[in-house]
Amino acid sequence: MSKIKIVTDSSLTIEPELVEKYDITVVPLTVMVDGELYSDNDLKEEGKFLNMMRNSKELPKTSQPPVGVFAEVYENLVKEGAEHIVSIHITHTLSGTVEAARQGANIANAPVTIIDSTFTDQCQKFQVVQAAKLAQEGGDLEAVLARVEEVRQKSELFIGVSTLENLVKGGRIGRVTGLLSSLLNIRVVMELKDHILNPVIKGRGAKTFNKWLDSFIEHAKERKVAEIGISYCGSIDMANGFKEKLEVLGAPIAVLETGSIIQTHTGEDAFAVMVRYE
Image (cartoon, rainbow, N blue to C red):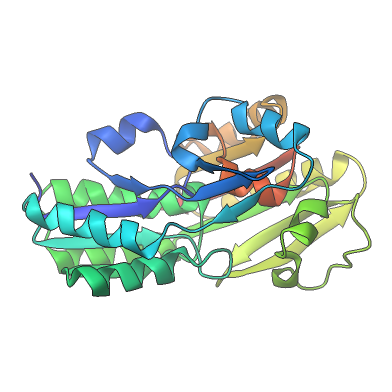
């Protein structure tokens, strides 16, 4: 096995086959739906969580993994022969997960480097997969950490929501500068940059998203694109429509349903477009 092991959390959106191929450890967050607690790992079936959220009496509540879970994960990896662990997590402005990981590493007294990805979803996946790939190839700790930083700097994450209601109720609207929470039913595209959600465009109707996508493609054409991730909550149709347009960039595109953690905060009919540049 690789001497360096990669750990992450379930806020990232990733193909199960990549988790297996690169031996990535994914620590699940939890979601409370109408008083019942669920592990995010048990909500991966397509459309399962969205249906639960539609029928819930209140907006579900997400929670970071307990500190003790992280400590146990790290201890077990060391017992299995890991000489060092690189633990990559969702931005601290959206979740306390990275701090729980840090405390867990202290309790375990394990050789762990904790990294705040500054992102989530497939932008977090980009860092995790590249780190795991390099570790599997025998890269040393310095090389793995440098690769993670390089990928982070060359990534962009844009998220579009059809309503601000979930962000408001979930307490994340404070992270979104320049938006009035009274304007709940407007379409907004935001960029997650340096831990902050910044509005890029807002308006009414689907043309808001399409207008943004056209401008994004022109922006992305200025650089060599390595890979693209499209994540969605709701119908896959919009995501597939985006994929068709983004194919002009000549990069592999992964279209995946985002997990329960992100869905809780974005609400239905939301999407994210993420890109990693060469």
